[in-house]
Length: 117
Picture 1: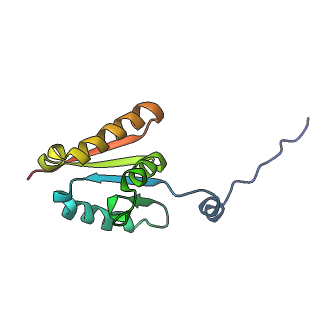
Picture 2: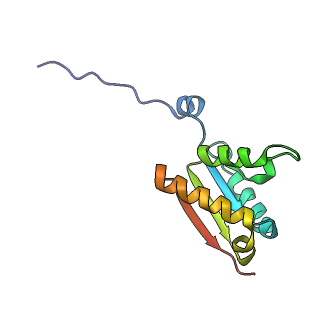
Picture 3: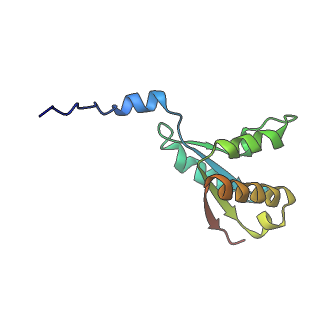
């Protein structure tokens, strides 16, 4: 009987060096940046394993819409900080539409957090 060939499991350091970290996209209204910043501080505790992205990473005068679209395309998870301000924001609702399209087309995971004003 032939012996089974054993394939070595990659070590954690091998995986971390070869694979990109999963990206969490944070979608929030400018009125909710306090909540967003609290969330980012919590996520930063896992910076060696995951990366976050939000519009604070865009620079003034940059093509911010393109940057947001690219970040959404890279993300695996989106956290939506939903509030009245979010739903009243044209920019945020356009972003929400893009996120829903990505959810439908490639299974982006959306995690809404409902905020009270």
